[in-house]
Image (cartoon, rainbow, N blue to C red; front, side, top):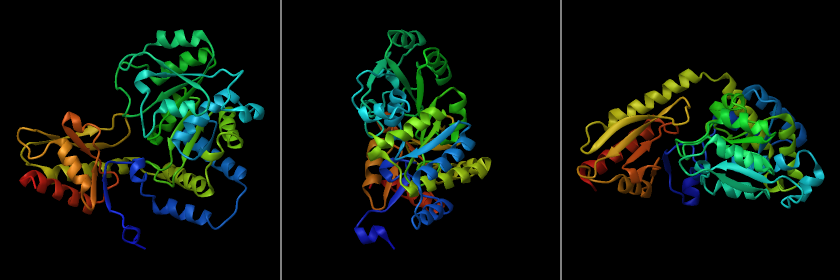
Length: 372
């Protein structure tokens, strides 16, 4: 079945990466088969969640885990869990936080918007976000001052390319300080599933990541962390988490994806990504006004992206113009354009096959050769 033709949808060449607005990831065949099989059966969802929890623990090194609708849901439910614990009356009371510690600290440089503001995800639980420091500087002393003021239930820490890349307190230091005050540390690691063990080892009490990004699964959020907190996250399904619950296909998909990851040859995977980046560089070499380079993943994941820097005095299009023209076509060629106003685009090859790389590079060459 050709869904694009049936519903009048443009085809997409995804040179942007694992992005929600482009529908996440291409689900791997092994994972799609497991999710499809789940649709034919009934399960006791508590048993299914317990099963995925065991797998999450094995893969991440955490005590337990569960699956929710997405990472954004996990942020809201993680904060809720830090306030209620496993007290059902408190779960049912939310988002009214009367009588509960409800302040949530977040470094100001981590107040990102990933489709909606992360502070809004915190507020949805009934908690009050407290931005600490300035955009480009937060210190342990400032965090300690807020912790000493009391009423803090959690600290939310963001591991993402969207954050300010300097002047902030690293996770291990932050976790050590927060734990002095028995305060929960929640990590938004939406695209950091390859670093789950690292983030848990750095002291996070809960790590939230997407099943539908580098795990290449059906849409869902993986929650990994302390068993008491994971239990409290899951209990929110009887309260404010009801609209954020995961279905059987999301849970089984996450199980299959985590099992696939555990057996995956990551060195070979990285080598394949490097090969595709080099193919991009080879195909775009020699264009006037275009400088090519390679950007390692800013969060330390094992892959890189091609960088295309446009000289506005030489190239026929600026980075902003090139991005707009490529995205308007059919197929839409969607670049990773976070830095287009700074004069460069990234071409993320992870979701591209060789034919798509050839098509994207041919179109870029055409546009930069004659400006059409």
